[in-house]
Image (cartoon, rainbow, N blue to C red):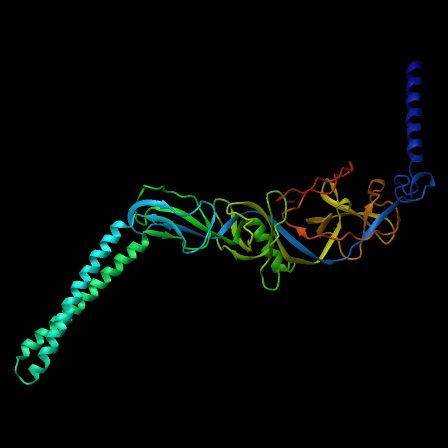
Length: 421
């Protein structure tokens, strides 16, 4: 019994000791020591750097995968039947409109033209004879030395001969045209394609494709706008959060496969009204000059659209935006020089800054340096304010995850093309 009482008194003393220690760690208001009145031990509040939120007009760019397409791509076909006897151009080389590309055996058409020219001569001779007969009978019939029927027959014979001459002339013209068609010409200037028929092949008319000619100056660039993004951009334009150029046409620059920027820029000149069911994108097209033939049809490029602006945009450095259990947030220094945690909604990246769409307003001070030393409600000392970083054009296709993970201080990964929040 005595041993039990001793253990009971020891347990009570232990609990009392714990209570004393707990009370010693609390301030007069019952909160954690140093949470509101400063760091423990009388140390001064931590120093932080802030930026003051200032709305600005922010240039916006959009980036998409695209491919090049010739301004015009014309099929070259023979228009007469015959044996292909010669190819007259160099495959893949530039060619001018009207230059000969193929020769179809012309001899059968030369013979046909000569025969029809002879037939034309015969009909012309008949016409001349009928005209002389009618001219001879006209004065004779006027003095009633010949019957009216004889004169009518002569005039009718002249008219029939005239019609026969016209028909024969049309056949000669057709034969001459067929002979010209044996010389297959380039319909436009551009780059000649690979020959699809070799010498000795039978060409059976327009149903046989011989090659193609592609006009490469100017050059088209085709790319697809994802349907969700197009709807989002339309809503932002209607709400005034995004402003398009005055003429409604965005400037388009392209980057080649090696990352180099192409020297010439163009304009967005077409957006399809339909959504491609296979890709869920809306096809758009831009036209760019290509005087030096740098661009070739079928190249894959990155199309960068610029010219739009985001008025009254709020941007903060990416290192100021943290991730928490409820999403992204920033630390704001209030008028009492204490820290508040502020949830925010972010848009796209603008250089090394985030565009903040919700959660901040003009004039508020956002902590950018020293975030690892503070917490909600902590007093701070504000250092000399850093200038807000110059925002580069925001790229809707370059949006990336948050600047750093809460609590680990890891730097953000660079945004990947086409990645969204």
